[in-house]
Image (tube, rainbow over all chains, first blue to last red; front, side, top):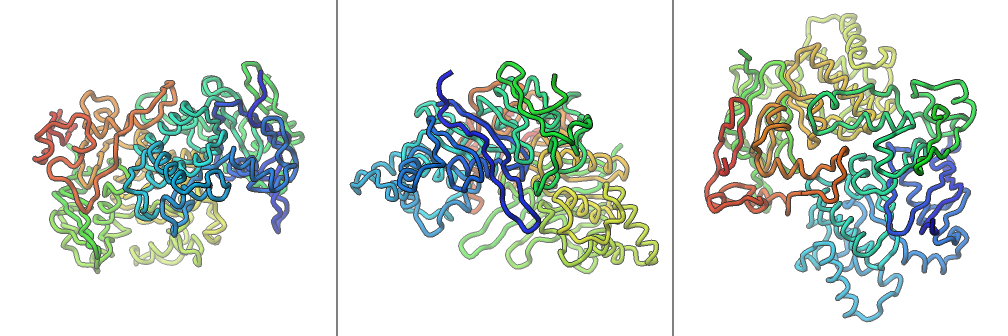
Length: 317
Length: 321
């Protein structure tokens, strides 16, 4: 197997709170091959957005490494990191909050080019803006509008154009479609997939929506309270979920279909426990119906069960 | 023979803004029978919430106006009911659950006090002890331990807060419950818990419900009938079977289903509807969907389609049928 584009090694992020240490991301190891999409799934508070931000160094890492083409970018200084940022960009969840309300559409898309000084000539810059607008499907007449004049779908297209402005290789998409209506969501998903095909982009796609993640990802990592509990190729994960939490997640999705398969299966009890000073052992043990003694004593490790399917659970043989 | 509980006839609602008049609901007809759950599905701006607020008579006074139509609860027309009388209906005969459980509870009152408030208003002959007992009962009904009634909303998680909101809505055992996106703000595993609870309660209390949502998956779990809304009109209505398994559909319904990634099949591309919903200040003449419709014919641009019955329970508003 060739070298992955981006890879993490024992990545940890702890936040200090008055109540103790909050383990937002706890020893996560992921890797993404060039041109592929890794989906990160989990419920609110499982650390998926923190993980995305750590990969781009938008947050300081507590411990561990982020390797981009085998170079640890955590060790980079400011100047080197600035160069790096041209290769990695982000699309944010909320198209209402992630655009500066006092900038016009063209100013927003221009800004990364100005900051990174990739294009100096003004005319060339505007050409690029029109180009990008065409790529993401924004009509030329919007070039001088402000974000508040546009609807959510168009705003998210601006966010995508801005992320593409520096021709990056890697984009972290943090719930890019969660705030959108279903028909607009489908339009944006199609756009993201077309862009990947044309430009060979690599995505890390963060979402809580399992049907979306299945649709767009090559590989999926399931997170629970800061830890990756299961990792497998997309098809494999849905065909053969092994971790009890993954199974519960899959059973919880209401499907737009009738019939027996759609009657509610067993619903997991309880809610996510606190990520502050977590007890040793499996984080999911408190909600797991099949928890054993060992589950509350020692952290289970991610183990390979063939077909590139990794699970962290003592129940799996 | 099923009994009609709520019947909406030809409802028109507009909002006046400084710049323009917004046509939010345009000729809506709807019937809900006793004990029945209706799913009202549509995208943002389709007029779902405006419809619910019209039934509750909670539309903002100055800017909104009901221009035409009737909302019949039994034989009372809610549009003509005075505010003082409406207060007796609200909470007792019809109640509403709002989308965001975090902002629909009072942060300065304990949840016990908030549930008791409803009883104080509507069950005047209950003594204090009786009310306390009833609060315990309702909390148990929605799956919360009764000894938490002295806690404040911030001490609960999102899923539990939504249970409290549901408890308040059900305190007087209303005939009709309006649930406006009750699970949208919740995580999937919590959503599954709340949906399961709502379904059990529905069977136990025989409450009719209008469930407003954009999630066709949630509808399939809990509803008996489905109404699809677009630009202030119901463009297709039928039983679950009609909508999910029937052969004939409104092009918009087909587009909605085409937009959902299928979890069991590997699809390369989704088939969404092109474009966006028409501006409600400037709705097209004829069918409001024609500019996005892949099957648009000439008559669609000029003439409004009327309801066509496909069979006894299934109705589509489209010129193609």
